Length: 271
Image 1 (tube, rainbow, N blue to C red):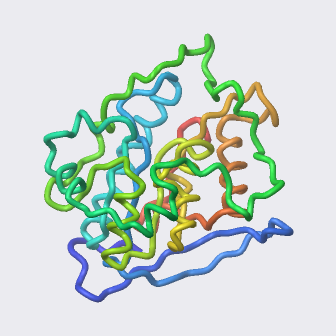
Image 2: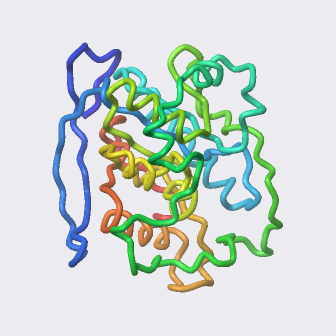
């Protein structure tokens, strides 16, 4: 359901969660009521430019709907962290980044995360294989794009509220703030599902390690997957497969409709 305008203090909102049985893969759904003051969103690596042109185009296509989600979430009183990794130089004088720099590090959080480390796998993923071959970097373009690091900031289509939001790529900073403010519900969105979203120091796995109620917003994400690699399905089917993996072995997912009241987002090519 969509609540227009500022949400009343103490009011909860429903989240429709989807997960899969770890043994059978059977889909399981439930509805929970979350408090906005106990909820945060982490926006992962929605860069202004990616080394892959296809990835850049899909981020641009998704960003306007994501901004609607963030606007609705902000109106509810939900905390928003913009985490465009390796772009903090761009934000060095931005109030939202300066506010993040003022968050004291929690030693327990720091030790749990091992500092600013990627997480390569949870115990629940032991002996499990990714459903995608991403060994070529996942570029789906012809001719293949050259690598590199052209990103400099988050895409401009996502508004950063200078007075409410935070900008940081530090998992310790985000985790410390969540702990210090009693925030246990964490929604992660952005790109790419099979790489940064799942493994970054602020990503799904590390949020699970911190004991948070972690959820992937499955229609606000994308993969780096080349359809010419195993399992030889379309790019968008590849995204579906990695989402199913996450639902089965890592955490539940949800869709943007819980914030916007609109039909879930689909990339044009996915239809």
